[in-house]
Length: 209
Figure 1 (cartoon, rainbow, N blue to C red):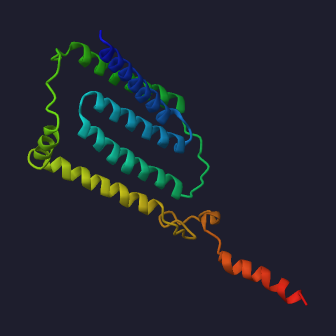
Figure 2: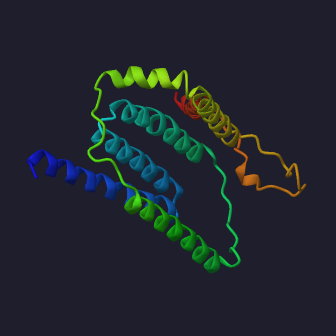
Figure 3: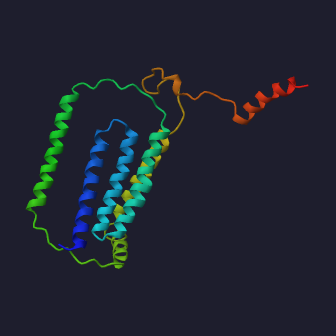
């Protein structure tokens, strides 16, 4: 094995470990902000895997769309929503965790079976270099036009959802149930900062001879 092959193999191991550990952190960490940051790290690691496959355009699209748009949108939605709730105890939490773990283990086993039983064509096709971008553009606007437009609609829906969640309108009672809401969510009216400073300085000026 040459130095280039060993370096590529080590990079693949590092990026794969980053994807796995980051995905586990996204699922297991109780702090949703940390989970969102780890999700961005997972997206970056996946972009690195695309670079190892000589798919530079897909790696750039991964970073611009998922890291630069989707992940930032998730972070803004989390940070702008000022909603504090005390979560009630979930009944049967242990059973749910066991069932979800069994489903995840089954999916992992299925993926490993497909990986080991599929006769992969190695080495893969030769990279076409700069012509890959032109080829991808031709396929996006011909064969894959409908999925491409559906993805754009999905991103638009995510943006609208983030705007709706970030709104500060709080009613005195719940629209559906009619129950009273936490009045602490309503922002208190406050005097503008410059006007507040002027009001504090004015009595001092009046007392000075």
